[in-house]
Image 1: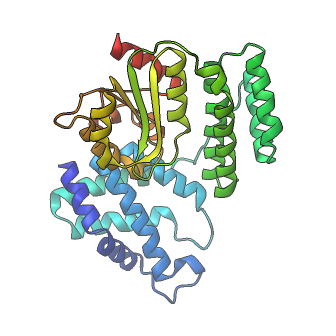
Image 2: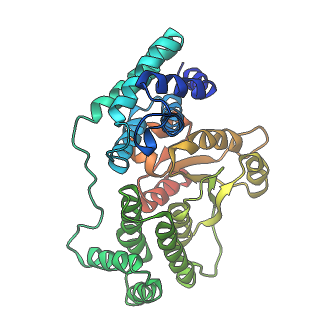
Image 3: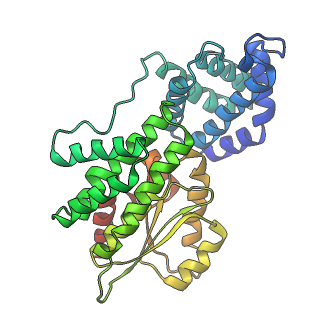
Length: 342
């Protein structure tokens, strides 16, 4: 039922958003720049699109996390409170949708509304006291100061002095990137700054290639990528690098890989494991499509691993999208690859 409910929601997102505006009593004469009819409708449309993805995979946790982010990011005096918006959409869902669909949608909206009664909390990722945690904090500060050159050279020196690349990825780069994402969610940095930090980390990973790619016979093929419009590919690149260090023939396709091309790629490369990374919930449908594509008739039917932020919110989400497993970090992902190919 959830896929069907999500499809109904997607098809009616615009008229439901318009009905929500009416339920809120908002019109173009309302005071406050973002309280006008059109901006309010845009906000409700955004909520409904995120809700449809969560409904499709039966995951209230995904929509609750989204609602928490909206509450943190947009708690401004001139914005209609999120709690009122969710209540309005709940009334509209029960009134305007078929009963079974409306009840399912309204139930998820109510769960998100209830979650907003608790104070919004966003813990940091760089609180450790060990040496690598201190290195991570300095690296983060350097990136926010736009000093990636010196920062990357210091991390290269750490590797030269014996730190394992797996430890650097797991205990420095991963928490730094999570903290960058948290700062963006909180509005402490803008998109340009987030892109700068990501580019700096990608540049460092490129400089580490000499430590990762060694001559010799490679064993089973592992394919790693992001699909559709997903551009957050640092975590997936970490998986490919660490799999390479363990002797796999890991091939990284990068981000935004077209789903329509996957069946031919799988047929040509014949991977034993496919790893797909995703950060934004909006791309869940593309991940489901990708998993179906890699198992298309004539393909090699590889084992599949999914990972990324949404899968950390809902521990059973990987099953509902149709994967064979998930991992919370790059090291755990390579451990799972080992298990699948042993």
